[in-house]
Amino acid sequence: MVETAMFGLLDVIVLGGMAGLAVYWFVLRKKKEEAVTVKRLTVGYSDYNLFIKYCHFVKITMHDLIMAVFGKNVIVFYGSQTGTAEEFAARLARDATRYGMKGMAADPEECDMDDLIKLSEIDNSLAIFCLATYGEGDPTDNAQEFYDWLQEGTEDLPGLKYAGKPTLKWDVSNLYIEDDFVTWKENFWPAVCEHYGVTSIGEDISMREYALTEFDEAPLDKLYKGEPARLHSFTTQKPPFDAKNPFLAPVTVNRELHKGGDRSCMHIEFDISGSRIRYDAGDHVAVFPVNDSEVVEKLGQRLNIDLGKAFTLTNVDEDASKRHPFPCPTTYRIALSHYLDITNTPRTNVLKELTEYATDPKEKEFLQKLTSPTPEGKALYNEWVLKDHRNILAVLEDLSSLQPPIDHICELLPRLHARYYSISSSPKVTPTKISITAILVDYTTRTGRHQKGVATSWLKLKQPVGDQCPKVPVYVRKSQFRLPFKPSVPVLMIGPGTGIAPFRGFIQDRSQAKADDFLYADELEKYKEDGVLTKLYVAFSRDQPEKVYVQHLLAENGEEIWKILQSSGHVYVCGDARHMAHDVDETLQQIVMKKGQMERSAAQDYLKRIRTRGRYQCDVWS
Image (cartoon, rainbow, N blue to C red; front, side, top):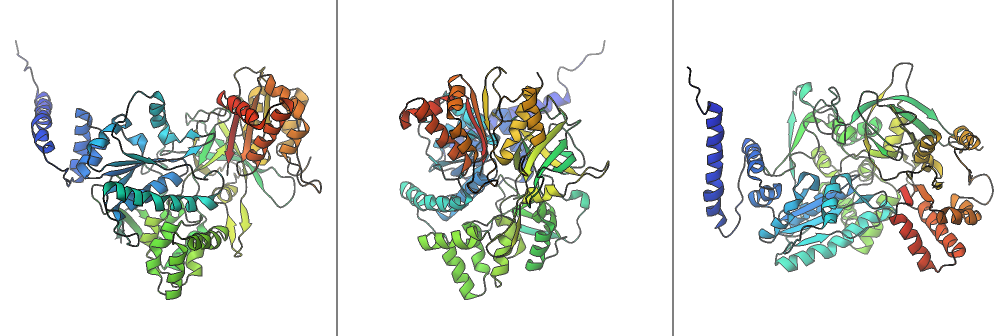
């Protein structure tokens, strides 16, 4: 009989590794903990990967790895849907160095937030939360798990020092967001310095986070070509599809909805056959756009660079969790086309960093004043940058002595993020097709520059020709914007313009049991004839001298609106958050006050209660 060894070679290796880890954990680690301060360790890339696996084995959290091993004492958690909160978090982490601390931005989705309390064990530690919302105050996708954990309320956080960014006017206008953020920072960092007894080393120093490496010859198969995360994900498509792995959906329909006039509204259909993507009426679809090639070429000419040059930007901090600002290596043309937001107005921190590259004293002085946190500086920034809508190209064109290196531009500009659209179809009708309704953004700024919407102008060009259908990277984001379960429950849908999009999907869901601006006119009239829609009210603001909007129709039909509310009906609002949603809410308050014989405070409480119960839902954007 042949005897079999109890332990094979693999078993010996595994057991030996476990023994070594145990010795480290219970003996060597204890000695290190006896040290007075946490020391910074230099961990190479291969060692880092091994350490990650080790941490998973012995259940050390990612926070222990980042904070204790890499020596950070300020961590800024961000919840971001469109990139703004992530950008602000990165700025706060960068500011920490200017205030004598060392910080990093972190995605809560990639961290074990259960062990958040362990941050209090690190000397002079501070957690900052920069969390955005979308929809009706819903947490962003990457902060959903953290939000759920907080809602459970099973953990106490004694001793944790944290700061939260108060609500900004983000849902009102981009005009205020930078001003509010800068104003808040002016008070925040001095308070931090006072609490921790540290001294500011000044805000005017320029600190580079990334080092540039250019390649004379780079293998094309090693270069990113627009993929959000995984190299070659556009050529080798593998489900599941999400924000880091979008599906290349063929555009099968792209037709104009306006019957006349100089405006354009597109009905676009994406084919999701074979993708395993599922959606419901009320969900959103994310579209990854590409910047206007004309703007990209002009930037290359202005900066005097070879856009086809391959390069990579690598974090100068070898221990940083974020190695590159966007997928690298790539070319300057791809970076400016796919990864960087070159059409939005640059924030003050970007312009402040670029000031040093102005050779004309007057232009340098102008930039210094423009980026100063004084009332005069904020007013100048609002006028010259925001109201004139100067993007980075316009700034460079109007300040001719400004000669920043392209790599610093790439480091400073925020990422180009996906655009979200309300889905205007129902899977009950088109399970393999997703449709959207999009207004083409195209206007002239006060400086006479032609400004086009990044996504809509790009989508406008995606016209199918015969069997040739251009492809667009997309993924579906789930929403809480849902019809009531029972079809017998009455619903009131308020959606001017493209706000009709999700309601088209709702009506298609239910259907399964005049003017130029009348979107989907034939469809809606047919639904009314068939009884799917009980009543249809349309407001054409341009058809008469006095403009008529949806809130006016609501007021005219107050009695009917009140009956719907009192019969447990649901109210849905979709469209512009800046004016329409506010005006509709005010009109509903007036109806409740009048028909329900209530004071304003009681009417506000009434609407708040039906919101809480999911009977008053909004899908709005600014």
